[in-house]
Length: 193
Image (cartoon, rainbow, N blue to C red; front, side, top):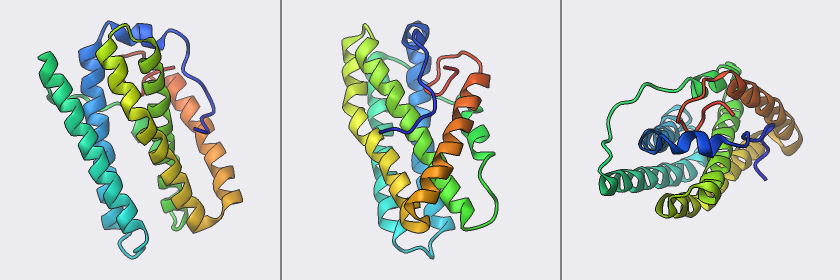
């Protein structure tokens, strides 16, 4: 269960299909950023020893996905390079409370929502893309994206309890849905719904 407050609108895959090199470039940057976020959390919360192995494994898996996307781009002759960051994650993180332990809990939940939205979008790409290789590529990543979403939620629950975490997750999911509605339509994994 992804716990998203909105679904991607029908036609999103059709809209991004005309810009697959840009979408896949964005996917590469998303995987790189996810690995970076896990590593940053390791440094910020090193006093929470139980977080270390989970976040370390997550960072390695995200870097592995980054490498898979890079290999796909190379096979297709698509160039990896810089990309203007999407406002999506920054706007989501704007809702993170500043005082601890709320900051950690909210950060974990924002990460879970990013993974959930990625999972939803990858499922749509796997089902609706006319490109069999790209559809299969995204289908192969679905399970790990769903697992990452669940891992972040579980980490938050271990630290703050089920009821308050799920209530806060519902609030942040509403925020995530609002953020998506305000974003431009562009070939991004986390663009407007």
